[in-house]
Image (cartoon, rainbow over all chains, first blue to last red; front, side):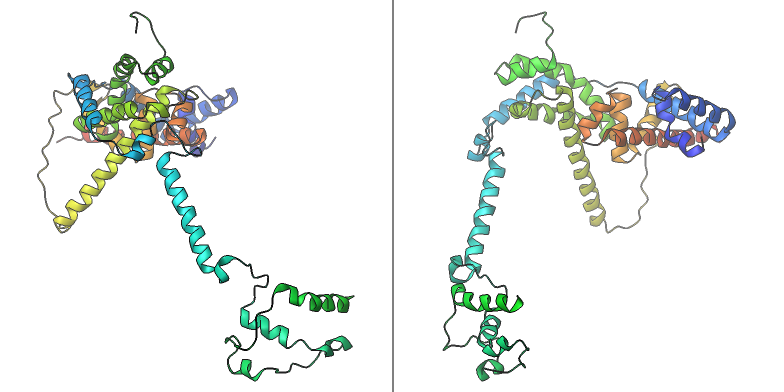
Length: 190
Length: 196
């Protein structure tokens, strides 16, 4: 046993929690190391001092003061949420936490609806930006069927000027409009 | 409540939950001195300790329905007292910081009254105030565990539940707290032996 292990096990030794083999190793180190022997005796006397130290007691009139405080606490007006909180729980939460959680959920829902396009009614199946989606679909040419990749061609001048702009004269396509094209790509892979 | 019947803590708190206020008074009588010892060693001021113990019993009165008999009542009440004592120490720290900022963080010499310990009661080799000072100088997590073990004489398992810390960590903290304490008290010894 080295000095580190010895110091780690001082309390366990004092409280007789060590195994027999550890007790033997501890005793051997205790006899051979003077520094650890001093530390061990110091811990023993410190524990003895604390355990034997003076115990204090509450001052006289403690209970009367406490009962006086309780009377004052009872007289205080209780808020509605506090009244609900006395032993009752909503969905397993304390009422105040339940209210806060519900408010947070409601806020998230409202914000989500506000952020989604068309008031959140439809979910965009394609994560690309709207203008890019249209660009991809518009440039899809039948030449792809030949098996050789088509050279990139610019189809729309309007889009070249400002790729982020949404073309005004084109209507947005719904997911169903692409189903035929998706099928084409699948056939090509086969 | 009939006289001469020794109820367990759990029975008393259950009776109190059913509205028996005498059971509450019995719990106060049973725990007030144990709690004052714990909190006094923790915060170092008797007046503050008594206020904290009063707060603990007010909380017990107000939150009695939160107690569930799955854990020991002593664990629950010590947890309340420990949390209140920690809050008090945090407040004290904040007050100290704001006081230091008010005086402009200037170094000032204060005359600290020297306590006359000649008449003080000694425990073995040390005086009460030396022991108290040594405990107070420990870090909070060491101090709490040490007081619960060596003053309150609670089991390691109970301390682990009160502080919500794994058993192994509690054992290690108590051991380290004791080693630090003996270091501090060793210096007390040296100082005392130094000839004036």
